Length: 111
Length: 113
Image (cartoon, chains in turn blue, orange):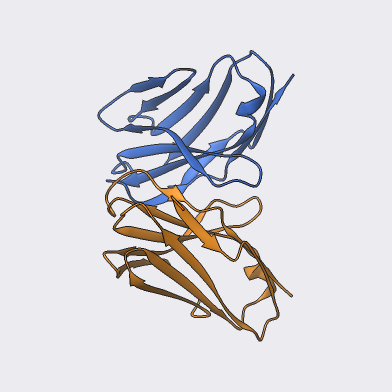
């Protein structure tokens, strides 16, 4: 079955700096890769996703890149702000079914 | 109310109790899910219902019993739980089983004494 690894487990950056979180997956058939953000005590919410027919996707300060050959994808957050502090989860799935999540990265943006 | 709502938000139970978690979605979605979130572990998929039919059961112990009476409601019945079952239980829904975005509820924090 699918296995998703995520690094780093914790990440601290200064406000205004960039943050990068990386995930690797094992099943080459997986074709949908979402990222969820979970603020303390809140529900996980989708922030960006990418499908296997695309190499990169951007939404304002957030971008995701996908390398199908290497089976890894990354979340990039630029110009970080304190409200970006949260736990970020990557996931891999086949056609949006049965997501396998990574263990999460706790991002702290320091003022 | 909109979105996905879960009750109760917090539950403390003994190992011999029987309790239920409730999830309701107001999004008109056709698929609903139960996930378990434990500290320092990935979100674990427990059950998936699509159009009120169970389509996935990820080797979950029988002390967890799901019920989906209609496409808007999902229950998780709990009995004779173990302390290691203490976790945050998240309900989610999506438009269809094969549609990407999951909409999560706030979760039910379960403590088993």
